[in-house]
Amino acid sequence: MDAVTTFFEMGGYARFVWPAYGLVSVVALGLLVMSLRGLRCRQKELAALQERLPGRRGRVWE
Amino acid sequence: MLGLSTPSGFIKVSKLVSPWLWTACVLLIGAGLYFALFVSPADYQQGQTVRIMYIHVPSAWLGMFGYSVMALASAAGLVWKNPLADLVAKASAPIGASFTFLCLATGSLWGKPMWGTWWAWDARLTSMLILLFLYFGYIALQNAFDDPGRGARAAAILALAGFVNVPVIKFSVDWWKTLHQPASLMKMSGPALHPSMLTPLLLMVSGFTCFFVAVLIVRVRTEILAAKIRALRLSEIHAAQGSGVAG
Image 1 (cartoon, one colour):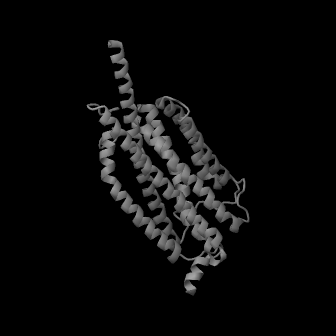
Image 2: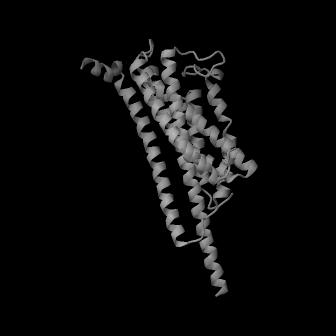
Image 3: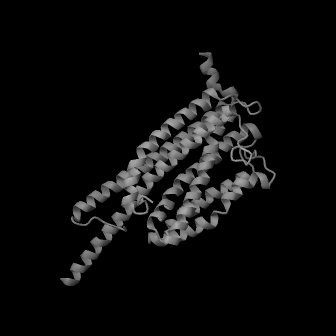
């Protein structure tokens, strides 16, 4: 138990070390979730459009 | 290059690469965290706060790497008029901005106990803050035009002009007297870190880089879909106008 407490105390710097790790996790995961959500959103939007406009694939360049 | 410069080629390659990138990301960051939090020693001067380095340095790296990707892609978009390059630049900006913010925030949390202050108008810190503002300016400029092509061109010029800040950040600790410690990783004479600290740092830097590329791929794919949606909407409007004239 003592080892666990010592670990979380971070030599008295717990209030600086853990918020730093927490902030990085929250922002990185938030960025990932928002990016994935954006992709799903566009996929649904495109599928709905293609259903309404059959025969058009929305080719852009290439 | 593997047909990467066309949207369909990009999607094909990205679907192949993404699972490997995510696996590498989880493994590298998992191992990095283990070494950073459990194995590596406390610093003899900075004590346990040195563990903030293992997330602060990779964040700083991604802040500058993201800007470099954005500037290079912007240049490619301007020179070769490749629309995919514009999308890569656009997709890179929010990721780079997030990590620049994280670099500043974790630096602040490290600075308070070690320097006695959350913030100082020091060369390294100030140039990093300017990088964050350049990202904000780039994103704002891109969205300031109704025509995405014009927005991309204007933002690309800002990205290139602002690129001068990246070497300024890198060398700020050599050019000016600063609170920030000098370079210890990317040095001509090799890294000045003990292997017990270098191992977790390199693992974290590689893991963060995999994360950046993997999220970049997701965002570029989103932008490709958005362009397709725009093209479909336009063709729908043209078709409606055409039938209106004929009728």
